[in-house]
Image (cartoon, rainbow, N blue to C red):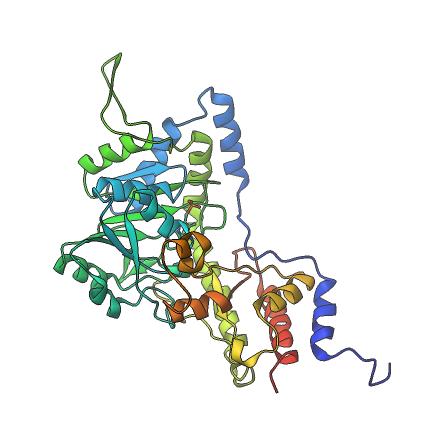
Length: 398
Ligand SMILES: *Cc1c(COP(=O)(O)O)cnc(C)c1O
């Protein structure tokens, strides 16, 4: 092969990687015992909400230091229900982050309240708590932060601000199941805490979620909102006092969740081990020169729900979609979590525009989730890093 026809280094890395089986950006692990357990539920004659949901809730409560926990069919309705229990609705404001899954903001609109965004800290990519107090108005009722990629928002400062201004807190901890704050599990303290068990999360119930509450009175309300507002008493008593929805988890899903919980610590330890390899390979002088922004190297609190890099758009001749196209062509899964929420058409119609939250917008344009799940090995991480850095090297601005 002459020098002129030899593929460029980037193309060589891509060509080699393309011959390997595709690597998804995430993949759940369901053990055989869980599969057998699901079959047992299916044969039991009771497949929707029943004993397995109760058992799942008891285990989740144990996990959350004995606090009341109720299970639901998503980690979205949990937040909507928390807002309803807190009595938040039309005329109220809820402070939140513009950089999250759109569910975080949609639930605020769903109850008729208005999201008030506070820009992110570009290092943690979470809501910038330094700017929260300036956003509080007489209409503010709650703060709804997100632990993006599982990195917890500073709980001491968060709850201190909430206490000082008498605000409720709904922690969108969808991504931080198994993360900790000062040695305490997320969910074991605070106000409302919402978790999701979507298949991409660190543990899954296929679809599902749970809400950690403060007392049995709130838990009872949560049960009403979960299923048509119905309260049953005695043999035939039925009463409806509020408009509830259809948010109950099935026993089949709960059995999947029960089979996942014992693996959580091992899953998260494996994620951290893989992330250490990402740092070892990406945090080198040669790769630092590419300008890729890495996440906070937190090996104390984070459950490493995702490994996300922020591409240096000012240094590249291709945009994120071009990087993704090349990664996918090389068999490497990647995803965007997330574009800035306030720039979606729905939110623009409600008054938000480009430039409102520049830090979230920059990260929203350039953030990229690369593969991380417990079944990966060192060679997979090497493959991702080699391919990604080769793509970036081949597309540097002069
Ligand atoms: C997954 C997720 C949710 C919603 O969870 P579902 O169970 O899919 O409804 C909410 N917020 C964040 C940040 C999430 O990642």
